[in-house]
Length: 336
Image 1 (cartoon, rainbow, N blue to C red):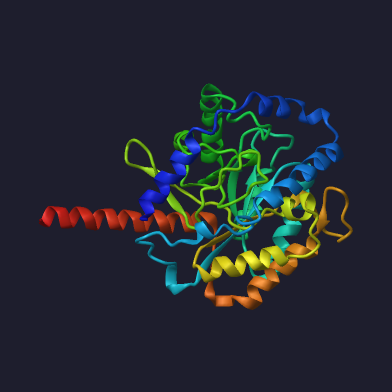
Image 2 (image 1 turned 180 degrees about the vertical axis):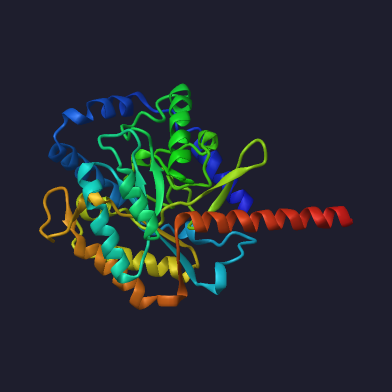
């Protein structure tokens, strides 16, 4: 299977599953009126059934580990790539961005912070500037984060214009939609270098169709341009520590070892909103010590074997290598 067929498979599998069902639309309209504890208990009950049903494909889907034909490997011969991302969903998360950045800097990491442009908070220009000055990346996270982006084709096109406005205003090149909804065809209307709204395997998401690869892949637009899709490949923090109520990072460590052994992309999404910096968790937070332990584990176990970089750098690397292969193919064709 070559890299292009991976992209085609990802797009075709997702294309027809994005027409938002009526039940889902009703849920997101009613969600603000349902207490958080009630929603979480319902989700946990459903999650227990999903754990049994998908025991053979979560957190590891063996089929996702196949290396695409023609995959060039990572820069400088690195064994695998690591990308850290953060979706900032509300005011609490916004307030904790600086502390999270300080934690990562102390251990030697940088990450991408994705902000909601027109949600329940306003992102201060000074915060984005401060993060960028310290080597962090800024991305756009949906538009309103209310489940409405994919309500219809017309709704998506209307919001896409606003999203493109913020991409340009913030100098951002990456996007992730709320609730990991995705339609790789529709996303071609965004002025992005990469999207990261998909995953290799995650049956707990409302749109659970994984792309079944741990490698980045290219999505082509009609004009020949395109963008890179970066699936997240480590379980989200909310899934592990809030939904499933794990109290350690054993799943993260196991999946990371599997990703590293196959030379894939280890991409994780950690929400500042869910972190308890006093390490005294509540019903909707977990100890920051768990994320800190994960970072320290990566640093001590893998060190220089890991290409730790930003999402935009991985996307640029993939796009550049693709362009070089295309140019070489044209040269061979012309010579023939």
